[in-house]
Amino acid sequence: MSEVCGLSGIQYQPRVRYHDLDEINDAVSGANLEFVQLKPGNLDIALEQISLGDLSIDLGTINLPIRVMGELDPSRFSIGAFTKGAQANWSGNPVDDSKLLFCQPGQEISGYASTIYGWVSLVVLPEWIESIERTTSRTNLTQIVPCTSIRPDPERLKDLWQAIENIVQPAEIPLDTLAADWLVTDLRNALGAALSSIDIAPAKVMSQARGHFIIAKRAECYMRERITEPVSIDELCVAMHASRRYLEYAFAEAFGTSPSRYFRLMRLHQVRKNLKASGGRTTVTNEAFGLGFNHMSLFTTQYKNAFGECPSDTLVRATT
Image (cartoon, rainbow, N blue to C red):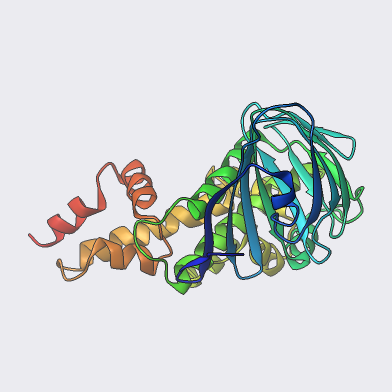
């Protein structure tokens, strides 16, 4: 990754524009790809890349149809998400902005991308996929065909895009290590929720409502004890000995929301509690960062949506 600039743990290569296909053969993270321009014209491909440890994120756009062939990262899984209007076919899988393309390590990919096309490629460790797989009610992620398209629930896909944007949008203030950890954990949770869309829901049973309430309360206690830590949903499922889908049903029935959103609300409430008890001897930034909120504009929006006021207003009242 050339001309990389660091942002407290994040390696970021600003957007580079390519006008020659030979220049981008090795530009995609961990991949060895070849390209063929399918229509005449002035080619314009834009690519930017972000790395947080072993996580790589590539964002790209093209203006002309191209043929792509080659091998993906041999040591990591590749998941493709696509912008509105995208149309492509990868290894026999038609994809558009409603789908994810799930590829196993070292998979040979062959296909084409249509005109005016944008994508995001998430290149993740096998440990992510294995842990997500362990939280589903049947093991299926590593048993499906090497390259396949998945159509997640639209809200889960929306959450995944938001998690991606939180990383790729320039931070208003430099990210420390904890903040970067939260970003990665949020992305991992959103990816797990999207991939679990291919899981089979558990059968309804007579004691389901009571069982949902009990496990949701146990999970709530687990999260409260670790409120300043980036707890992943995978970790939560393992601790509760429950599948991801079952835990999501439990939270939906017991608390009316998902585990990850509930955890976010818990952290927002803790920030509010800290601000109110501070007597003005703190800052919104300190309290937000301490609870893992690393994008202040997004945090302020979430806080205002939850409490009907800006966090700065809460802090001002604490001084009176």
